[in-house]
Length: 277
Length: 165
Image (cartoon, rainbow over all chains, first blue to last red; front, side, top):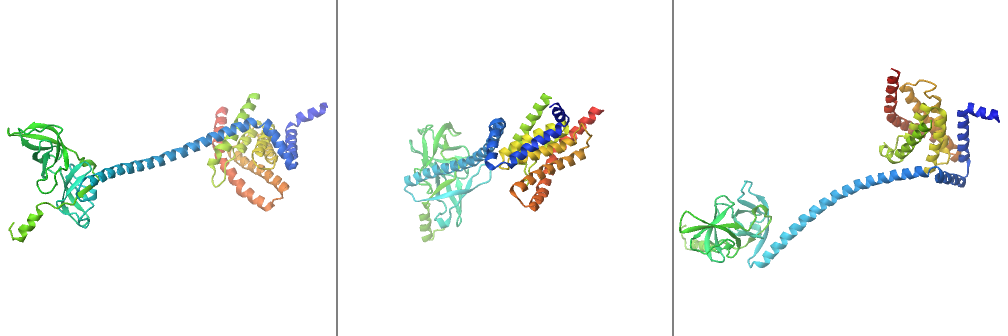
């Protein structure tokens, strides 16, 4: 017995090799059922803690993958949400325009703004409606919030619209409550006013609409509200400052009122009698 | 002694975890580095034959249990690979980095030859296909794993040289 232990200690490396090789060969030579039983034994006794750790690591890896997938999904959904919000906003605007179309008795042509005057205080826009859509020069253009301007140049599929904010533009407006009539003026394209007589009962908050005079805009189109009253140089007059209802920086969908200028019939008559202009 | 055994067991458990979780991400055309053989090799070089034989056996057995192979196949292969690498352990001879690299590649071949011989004996696969697989798969796997071994081998050499000085 003693010599066996001495032999094993002396040749421990080879004994270890022999032991493990024999054990491996025993496992290899076993039948499939025997192999499964042996594997089950090792799994349930020795390798269970290892399996637990490996499973945990795999779970963590899956969490990382899921995190990446969810991040991608968040980005995709954000893009979709932005697109839906844009569509919702457009839908809201179009609904507003539909209301306008129903409220006005005039024939309206819907148009879209396709270009702005590139200057800092842009005074004109280009719309995607022209002669082929029945649009003519001097037709008024309105938006959801009120008067925008008038068509000053018409091409086949496009038109140039002069905005109210153009200092060269002159529009006859009426204060609804007091029926005061004045010409809408601006010096800088931002601040608008009308001159009215000092005794006129004009107060901040009053609504200003188109008067129907001037032959371009029909009466009753919303222009804005009186924001303040100030004195002018002439003691007989005062200035009523008007805050326009239209926001020129955010105009996208508009309507052209298909209404010919009221003086065009006179022009035709003058032409017919050979009146020299 | 016990402390060193526990440290090596912990290292191997970590290696198994890495091998099954992180290493598949490094696969290039299906070839993955084999951290288990790499660690077994270093264990054999550092501690000698006997720990390498037993650790190799248990690591191989774990692989057998967790993969659909013949039970005992990897255990035998890793045992023999551990024995082979253990022959050249630091206690017996001084090893330079190039020789260590060659030894690592040879350990891969010893491991894979054993695996294929068992497969040949058990399933009767074609020996030609086994030889082709050995050249194609084993060599690339060994070389790829060698890349991962370069840093520890050089660091070890630098560390040993520093101690000697």
